[in-house]
Amino acid sequence: MDYVSALLPSVVMAAFFIGLVRVIVKTQGGAAKAKEDAAVDAALAEGARRAAATKADGV
Image (tube, rainbow, N blue to C red; front, top):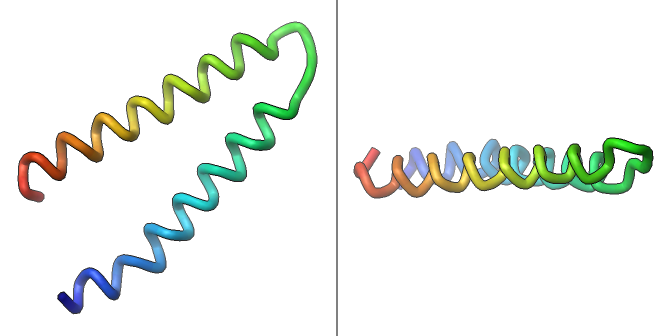
């Protein structure tokens, strides 16, 4: 369980950073706003899919 406590701060910081980037991108305006929002949502979905696949593989 030591590896969990060692990795937890990094995982939490990564999650907050992803959230910050998502908020920054979502609050931007302009002609490409919908396209940017879709790109962020797709990236988050891909990250969640990879995390679930990694967890399912037992890594």
